[in-house]
Length: 307
Image (cartoon, rainbow, N blue to C red):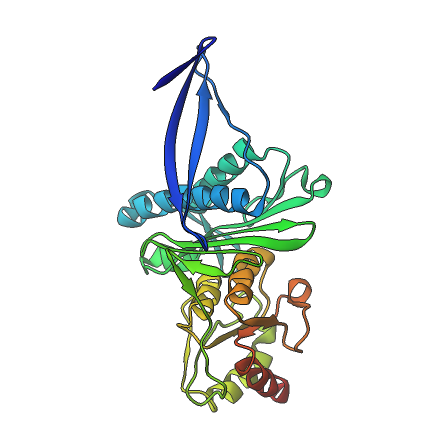
């Protein structure tokens, strides 16, 4: 503990996060004699944003892990048909918002449970948050959930973090610097055809009016690939494509917080992300396809043929 004079004490603790070059950052907080805390200003550079995004994701991850082990105190509500929210979702979102607001109070936030912050339209920076992706998995005790945080600068996603707190897997990306899983750089798979590929997807359970269309696509793709996986956490589906664990991914009717961070992970890992027509309009229509540059052409061909 170092006394800086003037009734202030400075405490420093180090936090190691991994990006393309293993960066160790030092967090400084000042404590005045009245016991209030003020964060040292962190530059709004991609590296600075990534550090704070990681810190926020880990804060939410601690809440998820604590409640996953003891779910007796979880309360569940249905926001809409087949769309659940728990007190843990809200607690995680509050924790993430608290970290962001501490370092970047002027930045805008779009969060799944609370929507846009008041200043979202006035800032060049927008944090897009899914505090607990895979809520249904969480409620059932299925250990496949994630925290997803993306940061847009002037409308362009520049930072992405997908954190699986149960496996302690931290997927990160900054625009132009590649994608990382913990301390290891990751790349999409190298397959070209669909016949040996394993693809991730999800049923449109919240938008069942699209079920007939989706079933045609699923049947077409499944008849030409090795297998299909449906795990229930969109951000991890995209992260797994980025890491080469899945060869591709397709899903209808997603929201921005479902794919903001994962989209960047895939692209920084050498992959391509489009909508079902092969256009970059998935942020508008919510229909997303992701794979390496070779496989996505074959995947899109089957999707278009089914539609």
